[in-house]
Image 1 (cartoon, helix red, strand yellow):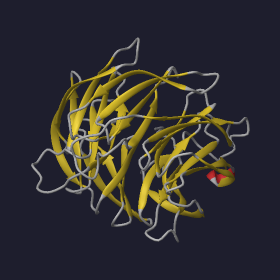
Image 2 (image 1 turned 120 degrees about the vertical axis):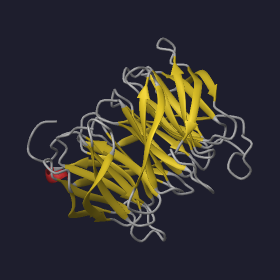
Image 3 (image 1 turned 135 degrees about the horizontal axis):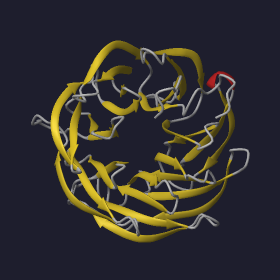
Amino acid sequence: MSQSARHVYVASKGTHGDRDGIHLLARDVASGSLALAGVSVPSPAASFLALHPDGAHLYATSALDEGAVAAFRITTGARLHPLGVVATGGSRPCHLAVHPSGRFLLTAHYGSGHVAVHRIGRDGAVGELCDLVLSSGRGPVPGRQEHAHAHFVLAEPAGHYVVVADLGTDSITTYEIDEVTGRLGVVARAQAEPGSGPRHLVAHPEGFLLATGELASRLLVFDVDAETGAARQRGSVPATVAETSGENAPSELALGPTGRYCYVANRGADCVSVFELRGGHPVPVADVSTRGKTPRHLAVVGGYLYVANQDSATIVTFELDSGTGLPRATGNVVEVERPYCILATRATVGDGSQR
């Protein structure tokens, strides 16, 4: 994400639905510090956010049994103007992404396991449902892998392929997307370690994928065929540097500014684990406390790392050491009701400039 981003959005999913919404935080570019901007918009069960390639529209999942997505236009000062809410066709959507063309919205559903494709109109509003696909299979972990649980959807930069991480079936599936109809066709399906539970992905510029294995507390590595988009697991390492006892459940991961380091949020250990990527292999460096409880999400913006601690209701700012990759807490902490996702604007939204 851009160092020049001057605003950050935070999706908040309250315990009783009374404080759900999207909060606007102002970001000081020089110090990296965040502060509540005093503006928020209601958005039921807001669990994840995605920005349109034009930088002028934002989308949010509504993680309800009858799933939905909300669309917003970004106006002056990075404020959000609602464009409407559309049913997704699946249950409990947990992640979404906008296709690089800007014409399609892709949504993963943890509850039903579906991946939905919706058309995006010229005005940024979400339109018709183009496709709804579901993987078959299950995994060995009782109560978590009885069927598909799509957890993350990634569109590769050229827009030809869509990659889906499925926690329920221990799989990474590559789809080809028809850029006219929006329909998905399976290209290949990679099996991850049984019981690993792939949750979130990040694509490294050198052409491989990293994934958090939520159920087995692993950081998974996948090679990707550059021509077909097919993935194949190469290996894995523990998601924390130090050994943990009990359930850990790694959540989000992100690359540092140069791609040399990877950061993994660990909810049981309440830490961010730092890995140096050497020849595409993650080498453990250190575990750093998140200064809060249950880090559900994190984001790297320029030389800073922001961690959303869900159960302590805080966003904590860390400065990244460019040499060692280690995060250092700056002392900047913002209180936000049960933060689920952090999303920086692509540039200086709302300052009157063209994005």
